[in-house]
Image (cartoon, one colour):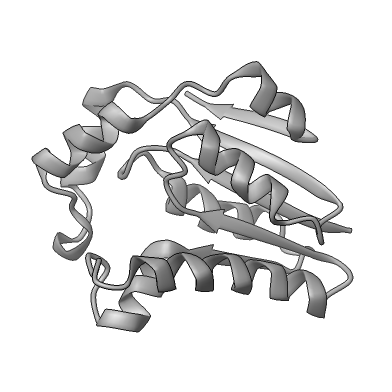
Length: 156
């Protein structure tokens, strides 16, 4: 089975940690993480490289779908914020190579997210101004979006 897990959450909420724990908890699965931060680091040498965002997102989607083309049995975790229903639906619609779509939403208290963000390595800390902008962008997941997915997981 080809399974894609689309993550949604504000920076610092635990998406990457969850993805890495998923790999450890599922040792028999072939799992790949496609992370927008890591693609930025590949392109510009740092996680907070925002000079080529169109290229980042093209690679993000292409790399995800390439795993589905290469492997018959694979899980791909799409590690990015996906803060709006538009992006959650976009990645659902553009990953049709996969048999199963799972949406994992991180809905943690803001105090905890801020604390976790500040405890990350210095190159991964999102400044307060950017955090506030991202918090303002975040949309609750609507029922129409939830219904698209085979499975919905909420992390509180």
